Amino acid sequence: MRKVGVIGIGCTKVGEHWATPLRDLFAEAALLALDDAGIDKIESIYVGNMLSAHTQKQEHLGALMADNIGMPGVQAIKVEAACGSGGIAVHEGFKAVASGLVDFVMVGGVEKMTDISTPEITTALMMAENREYSAFSGITFVGLNALCSRLYMETYEVKADEMMGFPVNDHINAVNNPNAQYPFKITVERAIESAMVADPIHLYECCGIGDGAAVAILCPLEKAKKINKPVIEVSASATATNVLNLYERDDLLDFAATRRAVNQAYSMANIDKKDVDVLEVHDAFSIVGVLSLEALGFAEKGVGARFAAEGEIAIDGDIPTNTMGGLKARGHPIGATGVYQIVELVTQLRGEAGKNQVKDAEIGLAQNIGGVDSTSIIHVLRRR
Amino acid sequence: MSVPNYWREIPYRYMLVGGKCINCGKIYYPIKKVCRVCGSRDFQQIKLSDKGKLVSFTVIRSPPSGYEEFAPYVVGIVELDDGVRVIAQIVDCDIEDVRTGMELEATFRRTSTDGDSGIIMYGTKFRPIIEQ
Image: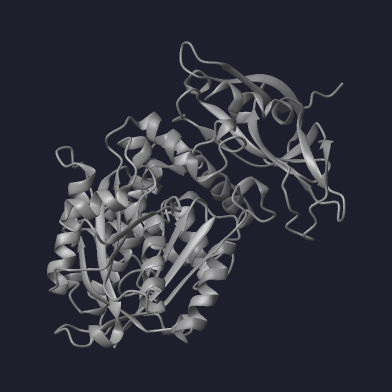
């Protein structure tokens, strides 16, 4: 297996791109990434997306995106794993380069959520679980996470204010990210006074609805070394699944897909969690951030919420997390999120994160999930 | 939702019919093709217990399309007396009175509508067991 590097990154601002069609949103990020890499040709494109069949009545995104950026003829493949679609695109691109089949690969994610109404997007997001049995009950995606949140808070006697570590941290970090959807600070008090969306989850514990695209260019590490930039290696790319429906699991608070994938990734990158300098966690809701921290090994079971609330995930904390705003404040354009994480880690490892720079960051880890940890994708990036 | 898509799930939704692994006894809802515990492909359909207790719940205040008339409503995970878990709405009680651990029983109810001219869908919800 060949070693793989990242040579280019690009992303759009997350937000309401009313005037921009899906294909152009992707192209904006793709052209930024190509320019960043200093190349204009690639052999293969992987596009991560979950909802375009609903939101734009559009599929066949591989050929669509390739055509729009002047590359009809290349291999172009759409991949999907709900909110983990972007991470899966990176993983598939990694395998393509590592295998030796292709050299220069574009991996991207795009989602345009604002083209349909909130009830429609609420319905569409439940495609992440079994339609006939889970969605049929009338549960929503935030509702599924609320089932975990209530059980967690009752089991470990965690109070509402102690659940706000992730949203507060994300909003602090988003202030210095020009691509963030919500670049302003929030307080714990304001968060616990915000409306209930699905009890016990408050509005300020939820990621918003937004449009965005992010793209990275991968190639063999040996070729990456010839490009005049800090060399960033993808030293692990791993993915695993769990029982699809949350309600069918024996332990609602065990993110087993993340546990499995991260163990593979630590082994593949030959590192330990203590070696990670900067972390990207898939905190679509505060409880997801908390359970992810625990599954990744950064906090003991039942301790993740307080660990985050006590500032241990801040840029100057124990493990700097979501340094560009995370899902809560950078935004969570579903199929693009996993690639935004890679873009942000590369920015940190290159030392280009400005006011949010983690000093001497060498190793970064990203966790992207689909469903309530039904699929988990872990990437480890390392400056070489 | 198309009529065949709805119709083929009727026995499982209306009567809580699941699948039991003949080899190891693990029960699933809905039935699977292969048992994740023992790898067996041999299942039998069984009627699940109508009673159970509430594992966790939430209140849906921003509902999906087709469920607007019920909002706000409670959805929870119920562990049935035979050990299998299902997800369903909790009805016939005030939202404020719902507690984890409460004893529940199945009840047949209307669940959603598919627009003004689509099919009206039914399924199983759960309600508190009233002391006799």
